[in-house]
Image 1 (spheres, rainbow, N blue to C red):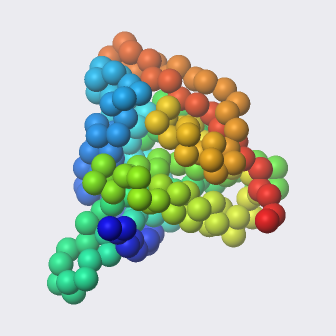
Image 2 (image 1 turned 135 degrees about the vertical axis):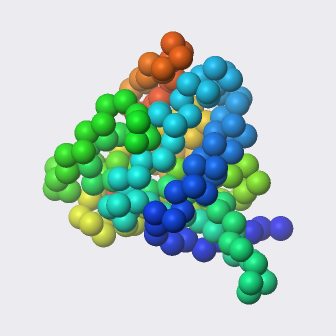
Length: 189
């Protein structure tokens, strides 16, 4: 059975639920590509929530569409895009660059797409990616760039992204996390 989702802009009130969603996603879906030590070292820094995206209103949440009117909406996924130079990472992440990008010359940064394991492999990551790309295009961007996890690379390749660099991001526990820089130029089809 395919779940239906509602997308909306994330708010400050979503922050606690987003932290829980991101942790569940990382622990549940990244374990085949990263060691437990890499996951522990990356959570909250490299792999986590950047609240600047919420303040910029460029971060969305996907809620499971429930049929019961009074049932709480469960967060199924999240993701966003940025008009700032930071490529990846949470509020406490490395390489923070808050300067604004120029849509005429710079690539919008696709950021922090996470899907809860209960909703994996149902097209939600693709839906979030298409939604954030559309929003960045509406803001004038024609190119996209991201720092992908190893787990995300196959999906992003299918969606037209090309790997340009592998980065070993040092973690606070002495480990390093491989991140893949990927780019995509806007194509009309």
